[in-house]
Amino acid sequence: MKVAVIGGAGLAGRHAVAALEAAGDEVVVLSRATGVDAVTGAGLDEGLAGVEVVIDAANVSSMDRDVASAFFTSVAGNLQTAGARAGVRRIVTLSIYGIDGLEGRGYFAAKLAQEEAARRGDVPSTILRATQFHDFGGQLMQWTRKGPVVGVPIQPVQTVAIETVAAHLVRLAHGDEDGTVNLAGPRPDTLIRQVRRHVRAAGKRYISVPLWLPGRAEKLIRAGALVPRGDAVLDGPDFETWLAAR
Ligand SMILES: NC(=O)c1ccc[n+]([C@@H]2O[C@H](COP(=O)([O-])OP(=O)(O)OC[C@H]3O[C@@H](n4cnc5c(N)ncnc54)[C@H](OP(=O)(O)O)[C@@H]3O)[C@@H](O)[C@H]2O)c1
Image 1 (tube, rainbow, N blue to C red):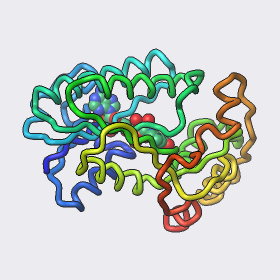
Image 2 (image 1 turned 90 degrees about the vertical axis):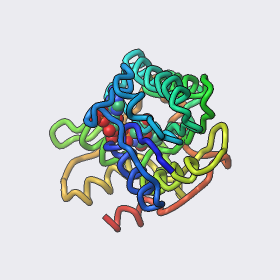
Image 3 (image 1 turned 60 degrees about the vertical axis):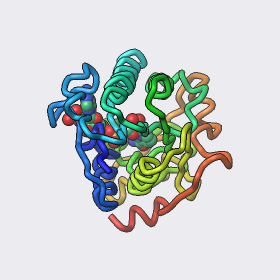
């Protein structure tokens, strides 16, 4: 089967590409680096020629609600339109578990808008809502560090391995499941503990400081909004096993 991965050179996208290739699929990577801009739609028609399924793993670096919403809704809308023209039979969109009601975090509001745009169109849609990846604490260490101090929002997590996310993207690409599928790692944890484990694994001596963030969304996140409540597929490896294997 021919599958296009939007953002196929990104963190999630490149694992999806590897998993698709391992499953014997023909894969095309569509991103600006390969001459396709999914925001403007430039190159999409050519890129989707002969494609049966699209996996949308594109991402924007901005956390700003308006900037990120404009990005995600343009990409999702263009994929629906160009996908229908190309005869694509399904679009699988990677989103985030537990974001309902968390519009106070601009990026999550944008992901909700993306989901809505992905569902609005003629091409059948599957949304994979995954919890944050095991890598997330390591990314946070790089993004928020000021000198030796890393600020970490107080947050329970149940992170999942990106390889596991990729395997489920492939499963959904091969299937015909409409609607939303939730996926999480096998064990509850806290973000600050994982950041400290990333810091130690990187051989750094950074100090991780818990951050109490204001606002309703942050309150819900502290109360566990991003941790599955019996409504997700739980799949390993757990964080410690994953980290040890790196
Ligand atoms: N990080 C987490 O913990 C987590 C958890 C659950 C879900 N997710 C979701 O997973 C998805 C992928 O995230 P990621 O961290 O893997 O992303 P990433 O590493 O930042 O990669 C993003 C990709 O998007 C491509 N892209 C950006 N602008 C584009 C455009 N205009 N047209 C086409 N491609 C474009 C980039 O390639 P070019 O620059 O070449 O265009 C890049 O390959 C996101 O939707 C995110 O919300 C993340």
